Amino acid sequence: MYSNILRHPGPTPIPKKVQLAMSQDIISHRSEEFVKLFRETTNRVKPIFGTKQEILLLPSGGTAALEAAVVNTVSPGEEVVVVSIGAFGDYFVSICEKHGFHAHVLRKPWGEACTSEDLATFLEPLSNIKAVFVTYNETSTGILNPVKELAKVVREKSDALFIVDGVSCIGGVPVKMDQWGIDILVTGSQKAMMLPPGLAFVSVSDRAWKVIEENKTSAYYLNLLSYREWAQKGMTPNTPAITLIYGLSAACDLIEAEGFDQTVARHELMKDMVRAAMKALSIGVLTSDEYASPTITAIMAPEGINLSQFLGHLKKQYHLDFAGGLGELQGKIFRFGHMGYCFPSDILQAISLIEAGLQDFNYSFEPAAGISAAQKVFLEAQKK
Ligand SMILES: *Cc1c(COP(=O)(O)O)cnc(C)c1O
Image (tube, rainbow, N blue to C red; front, side, top):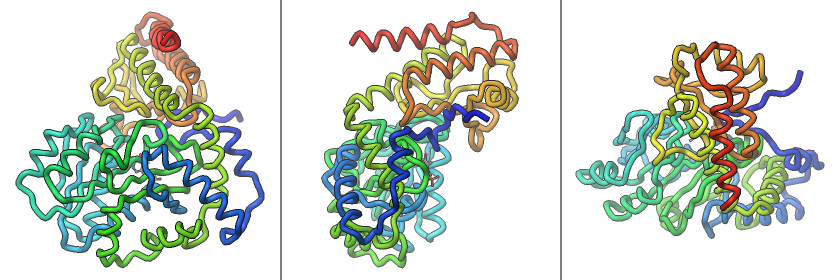
């Protein structure tokens, strides 16, 4: 059986160089070799986060890192604001509620972004807000929230920490944690970072460390102070995902060889290619151009087609594997992930196979219209 063409918004394909790096012999996490690997590798992740702070590595999925960001900064009974524009914003809401923190939730309809005006208005009547939690890239809808502007609003309107879930975009989009004023930035390995699942990244501002030092959390495994203490020694408190850190080092090689600005430009280009193709095929996309995510596009069910049958057919017939919609968008959209180890050539391939599937379902369109539109965007970008 050939492997699928995995075009999910996570997990995503792994480059061969990363796979090979992960086949190295395991080493002790208390050895000199590990300290060197940890220090070098985390230093190379800093430019991707736009920070000079330590990059803490948790042997976990992204959700554990979100929980760490919540429980280390907030105490029971304290009030926080959570911005939720989709399924992943709701993760923060659930985590806060589970821990007994009072969450004021700013909700926007699925498919919309939270603007700086939305947040400013929401914060206006509130006081004593400990932290504001925001999803940078809402993976359920394909919206990139304007985090730079939201950070500014939080600073102007409150003393709250600004805590950002960057799980499905960091590595593929610009972020300047220090300059923008993000207090905690979190991501995971299996989305734009080109790694298997199982490694999470957390970086913390000086301001947030002060809050964490004063906050008496009962967290043990997710205690960020102990991660900081051990990171200063070039290690982690417990056994880390050593194999994935080897992989991360190779992923950094690839990003540095391409140049991170170029990596960001490639994601932007892939987004434009997908959107142009869908337009040419008269297939809707969920989001406006303004806040469209560079890493995932939510595409509406083509007119007259049963989406679950169509996605099943693409997978069975053409080995092309997309993710369906979550929650209220189930059966209404599918999600085309274009992040990490994904290139314009992969977009052309996927669009060509979508067109093949559309023909199989007798969808009325001009053959190759989507491909030509995507190719045009691609060729124009080459000229720049
Ligand atoms: C995938 C994802 C998560 C959850 O990460 P896991 O590794 O599945 O725990 C959280 N937030 C966003 C935005 C995501 O895309």
